[in-house]
Length: 404
Ligand SMILES: *[C@@H]1O[C@H](CO)[C@@H](O)[C@H](O)[C@H]1NC(C)=O
Ligand SMILES: *[C@@H]1O[C@H](CO)[C@@H](O)[C@H](O)[C@H]1NC(C)=O
Ligand SMILES: *[C@@H]1O[C@H](CO)[C@@H](O)[C@H](O)[C@H]1NC(C)=O
Ligand SMILES: *[C@@H]1O[C@H](CO)[C@@H](O)[C@H](O)[C@H]1NC(C)=O
Ligand SMILES: *[C@@H]1O[C@H](CO)[C@@H](O)[C@H](O)[C@H]1NC(C)=O
Ligand SMILES: *[C@@H]1O[C@H](CO)[C@@H](O)[C@H](O)[C@H]1NC(C)=O
Image (cartoon, rainbow, N blue to C red; front, side, top):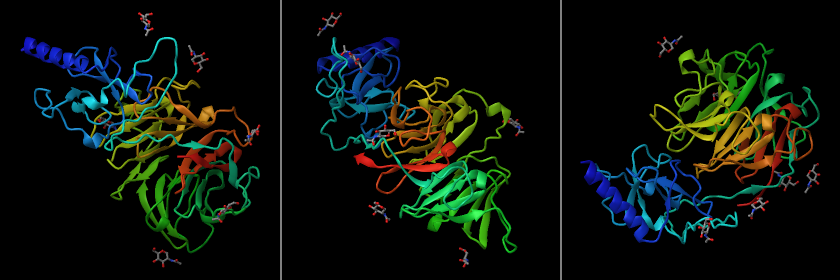
């Protein structure tokens, strides 16, 4: 049995070499193996410490599982581990394992290129960029409770019309700022009105439900409330310490609860330590900022453990680290955008990457237009402009998109 297997692996490896493509000798999936930053190492099934250097961004939906004896029935495919796409091995097309697409890292230089193969079934990786200097679109007039002020805003959401909804946390209110307005209006606040059943205290997360009605994590009241209008509110969840809310495409609501059962708390892949913000993608994978573990986790639907998709190297300010990450967003290409709170920056981690890139900020703490003081949430409008809740500066910053 063993020799059959060895023989099979040998055949596979000869196949790879035979078509003039590269092997990579790394046990670490997706490790850099080419001058093309869009390539990485895929461990070949049953070949110890040997992988195929291939283009990383082939669409998961185009890949079929390997057969029962780890074979691929389609011609010119090899069976590889690709846990970003599937827990069981998948067949990867040899056309993506190719020196033209993934040229070797040449000796004297550390030049990086980005080559996207001309293959329509390949997911296009986006390289969006934003202006590094923001404009203040809400608050920015110091800490306070006037209509043009905010007090430690921790959560934001933008609707289709670019209205900004803000969890104005220490003012115990939800504000709505229309675009280009110098003042906001109160959507929800602490009670005081006789005919109102509900109130919000220390709201820290806001997302938009049906008809843009805010769904609010009411941290002080330990519950989640949907706020239709001043006379109609509904309590959706009670007895929860929630700092993260999301709705998936089927309308299911997801909420994080930081008062975990002790046995779930820790830094193993099936544990969390201070889960805060969450995001749910179209495949119902849940992304969680595991704040006190300084990492972002991805849990596929029905998985019994997560994978680290950003950080996970203790707190610090290197590009492979985060420091109390908070708000997050994941785009259609699996790239994670995260408010790296204590590092005063927004980072982007490509799917499978070991380091992130600084998107905006990272210029120390302060109140210049390219600085933050503990940013805790982020959101995008329909045109791709980036909004950041610059919490300790009591303002919301907008960064204009400059390239797709
Ligand atoms: C790169 O470096 C290795 C070891 O230093 C050497 O054997 C090889 O010939 C070099 N390749 C090129 C293309 O210069
Ligand atoms: C590699 O890149 C760094 C900065 O990115 C640069 O300072 C260094 O000179 C480069 N090394 C070579 C050999 O090109
Ligand atoms: C806001 O102002 C900018 C420029 O000042 C303008 O381009 C934009 O159309 C305005 N938006 C709205 C919704 O009025
Ligand atoms: C408040 O919302 C409820 C449910 O959406 C609706 O029936 C009611 O008419 C609304 N009231 C006002 C004053 O808008
Ligand atoms: C915590 O989880 C363990 C194992 O699932 C369970 O036995 C225990 O009852 C839980 N405790 C609480 C307080 O929920
Ligand atoms: C961005 O802001 C910084 C800090 O205020 C300033 O030094 C720099 O000139 C600004 N850049 C642009 C392009 O406005």
